[in-house]
Amino acid sequence: MTGPVRQLPWAEKYRPRRVSEIVGNKEAVEEFVRWMRAWESGRVPERKAALLHGPPGTGKTSLVLAYAEEHGYDLVQVNASDRRTPESLEEVLGHAISSTTVFGRRRMVLVDEVEGAVLSAESGTAEVLRSLIQRTSVPMVLTANDVWEPNVAPLRERCLLIEFGRLRPKEIAERLREIARREGLGVDDGLIEAIAERARGDMRAAINDLQATAMLGGGLRALEAMQSRDVELNAFELMARVFGAKRLADGRGVLANTDLDPETALTWVFDNVQTQIRDPRALEEAYRVLADADLHLRRASRFQRWELMKYGTVLLSAGPGVVKASTGEKGGRLEFPSRIRFLQQTRAEREAIRSVLAKVAQRTHMSTSKAATEFIPYLRLMLKAGDGRIAKALGLTEREVEVLAARAPELGLRPLKAGPEEAAAEERGPRARAAARARRARRG
Image (cartoon, rainbow, N blue to C red; front, top):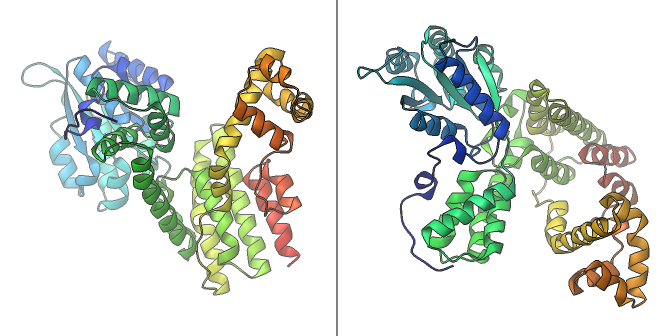
């Protein structure tokens, strides 16, 4: 990476100035625009406040700032976490909810991080926010990372909920390339893709990482040295909280304070639970709790029943600790999950296999799943027999031929230490793995 490196934070420098510049979450953006246009048409919406919620770095605040700038609004912005008392919130926002400024400009109110104010402030903060929403004569927008905290319920009832999801790596990578071009940087495309992948849907984190790696001299090694420490530290801190919980209430808000998504956190807990709980009966109960947590989380995502998230996150973040506390065990050393380590080690092979499946599917007009079961076994035998014509016809690279001939992708890639029962359950997800491990625990 070569080129000038500026000290101004790029996340602010390249924050969207127009709604059309917002990356991803198209449906959420469109819903917000419709809500604002209802205000602008003179029809006060039934929900006078909109609550934008989702993971950090997905564009919630940026959307509001961009809309205000593009459409000429006077924006009053406060961070609710910095306004710890009901009196301070009322003092700042009480006058801001009038319809116009002294110069006749339209006004909009933005209250960031409302869950921090509701959960941390003195009694009465939620009631003040509810009162402001009821009295406002201007659009009032709230943002939150975790909208399903029980204490946020009074605000959910009065707001239009607009959900923001994590951004796709492809969306992040396109934005990073644009920033690199505007900064005059010569950036390796592999570095761009690595940053986008490791950001886990957080655009702000990705932009910060791009700037940080540029300041460190660039390259994948700088990114890996910087990020592996952060992710590992966050994960081990999370595990300490999970297995140190004494009550289910200890698990509230734990997952909101980590960059790990629930599925990754579930993998960490699964791989560490046997080192923390030795008693077979307690281990079985711990796996049962984790299976229930996985069920709630998956149902919330599959059926858009987001109220189930609070049950799944509490069971995941405190359930194993409660079971462990009942045994009085101290637990062993926390370890990096073997499954995640294995997936990292076999990433290149799995990417090669996916590439082969895509090429086969395109040329044979079949799905990739059908290609894996009905075509790849025969292709592998032909390649091992030295038939180079089929590889040329399919456009396979030397690396893809090597990987395909060495492994049978139809058997799948799984850790060698996994038992046959766990291996069979591996492909069916965390709940199936939990059930398999629970059966092993009962057998002692």
